[in-house]
Length: 176
Length: 287
Image (cartoon, rainbow over all chains, first blue to last red; front, side, top):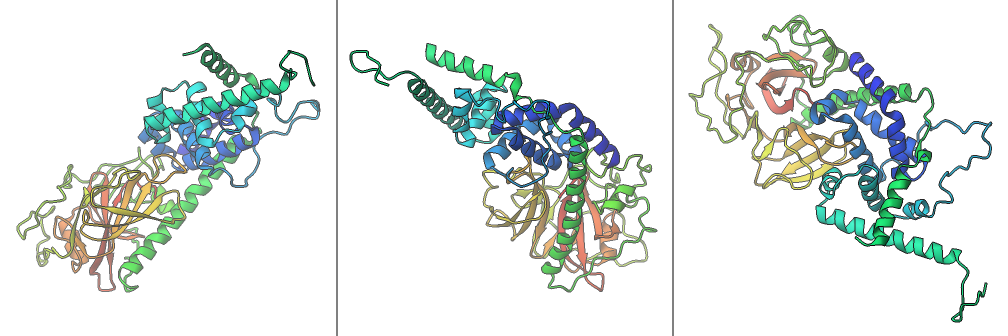
């Protein structure tokens, strides 16, 4: 087991930054990302040889696992926070770097499965068939979830843009 | 695709490619994760050892004891990791493999079973007759093993339509009803019943995807009497098992014998060394 976990440890060292970034895209915030990554990696590490043997591509397997874990909301167990504290030398870094990104905020409002479909599509570049396989859902469900997500995003962005613009009366005069 | 959709597509790709998505891990994060993995594995091993014993006791009304582990009988049967972790044996007595050089109890460390063990499992529907060939030649001077056909047939393939290593997520095997039952391990547990199996029981599945239900069937534990294609079943003696299977041996979990190159039977025996229950387990099971 020692050798196996040494191998797993090296894998974690190499893949952790990428997985945390992916987790951030999935969950919408760095702390949930760290929670998700830690939970999934610990479970996979506990059966590392089996995962390698069965999948051949542990990284892809882990990403699919993270997407599923995100959807199932299984990650909400309190555990040690793996994210480094923001250094005091950067006191003005906002907690949410995408605070002023309307699209990011709109994505946050999506149900977990719709968000997972968006991430798999636009972050990972997976096809509908691949997303269906990754999330163990039908291709039709992928299509409908993506369609709903896109519609929601478009609506929210339109509303956001409308709110930002001055409201005009029927003759084009600004009223507020 | 409209210009609006194109724009939203491009915006999504830009957002997911944004460098601000980067999250800086603590320097000791990898060590913390590896320690967590080790902890989970240790807990799973302990829980499954305990639950295995509980299953055996439940099956036979508390009258059974698994045979003690006798290292002098099985020195070649167990690698050092299996002894440390209580994992299933990767090799069995009599196979005389070279001593393992790694301590991995999981797949990849699988050792070949004795050549007397069939490489391909007999079919689940294979008839059991008194003339069915035993896997080994009976030891001279001992009575010939009785051929038991009581109860359902459990074979290397599985138990009726419930096959070992079958994927149990989504549609269950034909005629089999699976009811998820809580476990304290990473594996998913189901109680099974239905016309597709000779009897009810419990199956443990190793998740294909962590944190989800289902997975590959790793251990099948019928709750009623069963017999193997070789005629070992309830009422067989420990000697019968050892005569039928060249690779039979004993460890801390009790009496076992090779079912195929990737699975074993585990036998629960009572105080008189008579088999009361049988379960089928993948040798690389992490359940």
